[in-house]
Length: 259
Image (cartoon, rainbow, N blue to C red; front, top):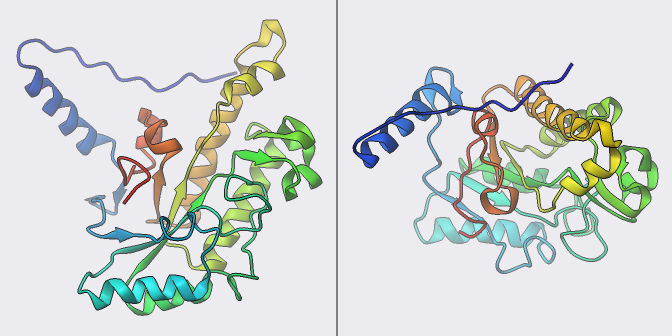
């Protein structure tokens, strides 16, 4: 048994702008995630220090607090403070993903001291993740190469594998709780199609992709079940995953990665 993507078709004639506004009205009324009875609105002010510290590679606890203070000093009240790629242990820079543990050399006590500092000022926390892309030499490839389409050489975390899906859900859920994360941001900077196709026999092409996407949605649904009201920010290299079902679960907060 498999499922297909959710597709919406809109038929129209006449004024193009009117047709676009009909589509927008339908998206807002029936698709965009809601908090209680209210439609989610983008935050008024979200900021990060990515351009100063190579995403988060050169950042530490003190620099994050310093930047938060700097915004308040200049009269800019933040809704969200965003901690970007590179807060985890890595060897060659932020793209070295697959060890989802806070680098406590740079962030003693984890991200929680920064979250607590921000929360005391009325600021919520966004943290960047890219769980599906896994590079060689990381925790996932060393401990569970059987979960990776690509094995020990790295590749795609197979969310169609029930064990991999369960581990990821529980692990990220634990980080959301322990690090005081208010908004989960998920990126995706790779082409998964070759990994899916290589894993399937000729008469089964597409099945690994279907199972992965089913797992991807199940992962988000479970995170939101465990954290009612938590927003998800969908990035995917700056807007490459804005399909209808993704947009029923997440809000793309940025038109690109830059703010």
